[in-house]
Image 1 (spheres, helix red, strand yellow):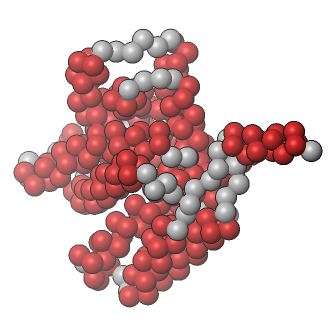
Image 2 (image 1 turned 90 degrees about the vertical axis):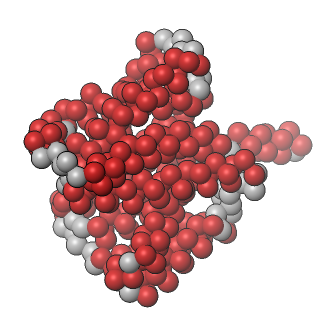
Amino acid sequence: MSNSRPVLLCVLAYSVCSTAMLLANKAALNTYPLPFALTCVQLIFAATVTLPLVIRGGFTRISAKSLSLYVFEGILFAASISLNLKALSMTNVGMMVIARSCLPIVVYLLELLLGSAGGISFRSTMSLVCVVAFSSLYALDAQGVKMNHIGLVYVAVWLLILACQMIYGKWLIAAVQLRHWERVFYTNGCGVPVLTILAHHETKILFAEFSSDTLSNAILLLTCVAGVAIGYTSWRVRSLVSATTFSLVGVLNKMGTICLAFLLWPSEGSYLSFVALVGCLGSGMLYEGNKPAAATTTTTTEVKARK
């Protein structure tokens, strides 16, 4: 990864927001076990809160075609959530942890296939491989792995859609020039219609069973605030690093949150699980990043010119 201070600060901010979001979501789901409805509420909150910021800064004029690109981003986001929940229902948390740890490798291979990334060093290769290995060790020890043929198909499709979303988001930054707050607004706003359809049944239950408990509602509000923060910081990080690095940061955030939960609640797993989590985080920190495809192409052209 880059040693640039701004990049590290942005990644750190994104990681803190991601950890807060994951922990708050876990607490909120204990009161409201309605993932689609909660996500829909978070998107509506984010779009509503960021709208005044966008208006104050002045809307950037974009064409209908550019707007449709963000609509597609919203569709990809909704599809990844839907497939994640479906795959989880067909397998278990352990299987999903292993699959998620494979995401950086899948993203890199797709970037390589599309010609948007160059080669990576042996150290970076081993970093990605070890992240998968330690994540698998954690999953096998703490969660166990449940799988079946249909479940594996859903996991594979979810992983592919998520990888495409990572690459598409990186491409979108260059394709449509916007301020980061505008990206947060459009991403959440365009995702609301799709999530509203998916969350129709759960939303009815949420309003029917809405709790008057102050703590529960404070946690729900915290997830919404964290959602806005993670939206902004994620676009900042995406603009600074490759899609592969961004996906790796996401995996490390997840494993780091589990590690923190283990320290807070030791009964969450064994010490072998904790060692595996630390190994995963350590392996990920060794990743050096991949060379841009343009740099690789330029180097190849220069070599040919010298011959």
